[in-house]
View 1 (tube, rainbow, N blue to C red):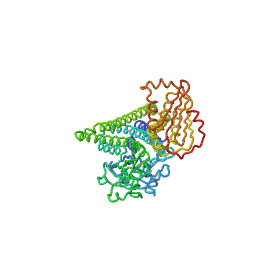
View 2: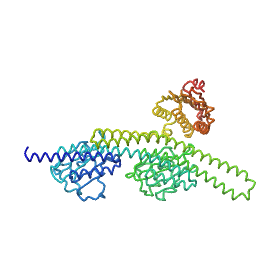
View 3: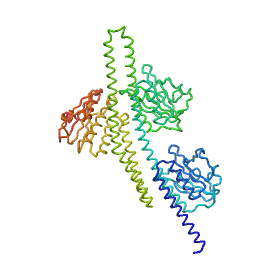
View 4: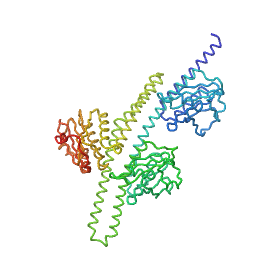
Length: 614
């Protein structure tokens, strides 16, 4: 071999060694952090310093606008980190071309490339190489490197840069999964904290302020608005605002005019991310010239009756609202409704107490009646507070058990897989490391699914949108999948919406609690739900073939059987009747009868089974 050949071979070997070293270091960075910006900053700096590139950058695809946004870069030029955001459309420049085709592109002389798009901060670029960042077949971004010299890149550089791009794509996907799981956990934690804060406040003004402040902070919006329905005037009045112009307060909306009024008219959440072009925009807001063009509004309900709307506002380009936002704000609105009505009741009691103090000297003969009325109001408040605390404790216990049983185990397993991936990388077992990372990704996906299940379990949105039967079938399928116990649902008669969402919620909660008991205690092989709609009542039977129990002996130990007592009290609270039958070894049957106020419903199937079973 000639001296020049030996020098070339040595140079190639050194170059290959540097390339492999960078791949190894990037792989270690991937497993070392789940913070996306920190990871990308390390990667671009490492690639530029190792290979001496003029400029290295990572562009990620914005899923809303489908534009490519530069997330991190490292440059030999003195380019300020305060440089305005760089955005490219698909097909624009070499980076946009790679994003559009999903294939690497090498240009060793940008002066000869028609698609090259020069940038004023990088005037010395002579050659450019870009590779796609993919998850599966989907392009999520582009890794771009630039050089000051013509003919700087070789075919081998494409292979090495694509390997690095694949590593970066894995890191991006892992970071996004982790961030989604963390956001869901933080949302649940925030709702728990807000519930505690609301229960500690009784003054109406303080409750309203807490609701608006926390709703704005929970969803990261710019401001919030609370409107209530004035039934005699048939108007929606804005009674409180947070972080929006005060001129919006006391605005009046006609039914169906404006987002909040439309929510109260229909009983459904509304999302508008382009408010100036929305045809139902209220004329009263046209005069105010408000700086918001995105709004999310959800209904406030009490005992099945709509009494107001809670709305969040923002700029659409900064914060467009999504379906996930609708679900989270709807959960928050349930807490807000209880707190507002509790504050109203407290205000009534306070006013009554003050009136009694003022009139006691003049109207002694009415003191007995006034005391009875005050005691009744106090009892209502005590019962409301007791019910709130009991419901909160049940939900906290369920969430804690769900997080302990599934989420914590998935997090621990994911950490073990990531740690194993680190060890494989240190041992240069790259294939094994990729396998471990793929396993960690799957665990994080399962964690995301589990957290969604927990959030949905707080209150299924489909109970309002699709009704009781659809929700019971959905819950039965979820129960069967989770417990591996077959659960059959049979419906007789013509299904109708019950007289109140509160009644439907109570029936759903009874089924939910009953199936939870089956999964936890019954050791059953099968469960059945039988629902019959009659002209005057709804009848429902929940039956399993499990181990059963001694009912009389069990309910006598109240401290350990709050579940059964809670089911009975929930049914009685909506005017229903319940019978619970169980014997050791003979399974358990729970039979409900709920009054129905619709007399037009006719039965479609024989009632014989229900007469013989209940």
